[in-house]
Length: 201
View 1: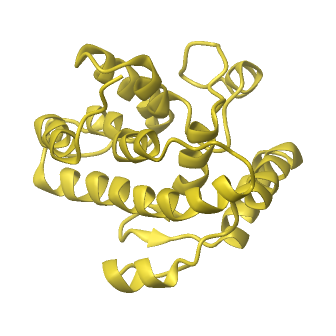
View 2: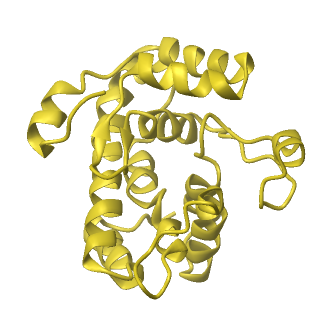
């Protein structure tokens, strides 16, 4: 399977971003998630997981591309429908001819995974099916994504802050996050926070 280069991925973002501001917000976030995921990949390898770093790189850089489809013509983001960004990104990448293994990074990274039961119980605007990370690479990108937020202004998120956030969706979700922390380790966010000028909360 041929994976797109960084330059090709950046061009895809530029093609679909409705505004320069949207591109900066989403692509910068994807770059940060990629940096976190690749730093954690070494620990995962030492823990006995066979991580394809090239797949992690491409998946990280593409995971949020569906967010662009939630902007309206005035540049406003549809926050109410935000949970749809993963399935929108999956379809976007499929239309672009990218392999299913890359498309899945879009639809299988939200929260710590969305089950069919979650969709039905919460009335989410998604086709009722499981959106759970399955491969080690999918789990790693999902996990790395939890440590940075595209809020205004963007910010880094500590493991404790995210654990408190995800517990609102159930103890089972908090346990999934805790197990990922145990497997992948908790990243040191300070170098990236200094490099990007985003606070840590």
